[in-house]
Image (cartoon, rainbow, N blue to C red; front, side):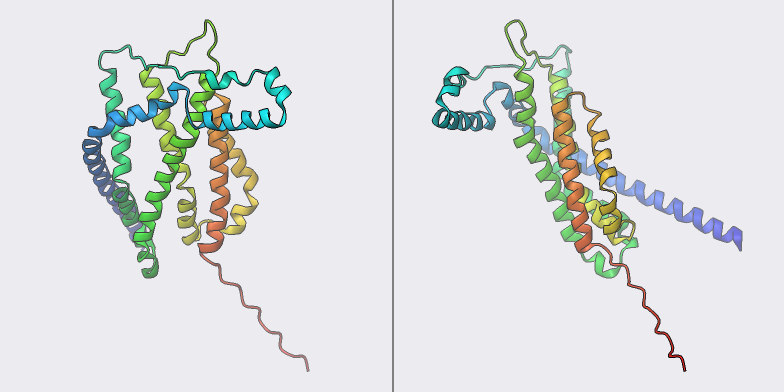
Amino acid sequence: MENEKGNDKVLSLIEHLVELRRRLIVIVFAVVIGMGVAWNFSGPVLTFIEKPLTGKTYLTEVKKSAYLKVKEHFPSLYTRYQLDKEFTVAPKDRRLNYSAPLEPFFVQCKISAIAGLILVLPVVFFQIWLFVAPGLTIKEKRMVLPFISVSTLSFCVGALFFLLIIWPVIINFSLSYEAEGLQSWFNLSSYVNFCLRLILMFGLIFELPILMLLLGRFGIVTYPFLARNRKYALLASSIIAAFHADLITMFVIMVPLYLMYEISIWVVWLFGKKRPVPETSELAPID
């Protein structure tokens, strides 16, 4: 009897691994197809990634508005620190450089792969759903379309948030170190790899509430558990961010990551699995 139970567990594990392999194969094929489609517009994607190199980003307008406020309310400070020079600085024409013969080709492959992955995200999340669906109830299985839609949207919002808001800040901060005798000379692979890595990271960071919701529905995590472990979440966010060399990148990763944890707490509280309240037995009256 014990041997039969042990064999059933082994078979169950093997079946799960076979199912996982099947889902991964479908995902890989989908990404390859997406990569082929994305190859046609990998050039415009690279051009968009290069935009902050000019030094003119949304930060330029924010800075200009702030300096005009200083001029209006504190004209002496405006004159003393010569803030008017900020308006006369022309955007620079900086170029990415490569040193290996096939380096641009491999960079184009990487851009196409990440863009292709984003294009086929609905397929990726559908395969993930099919893998975890056997452990769901009939009512929960009906949530497949909301799961795929919200997961895809969350990843795309995270990626766009990085590209439109965070990426210009990082490059602008890096370019601020330029001075006489110190000129930026960005390598193509290093520049693009850094950007693509952070796109994936921010996409995954914005998936954290979805992951916590799934774990909450399975009863693995609960609202009280997440709420009382905030300090460990902050520590984990700091450790994950510490893998990046510069302080600015560490900061822009740590803050959104921890904010997503806070959102996860409320998502689990609202939609997580509710534990049944134990019934209190009534005491029999004493004669």
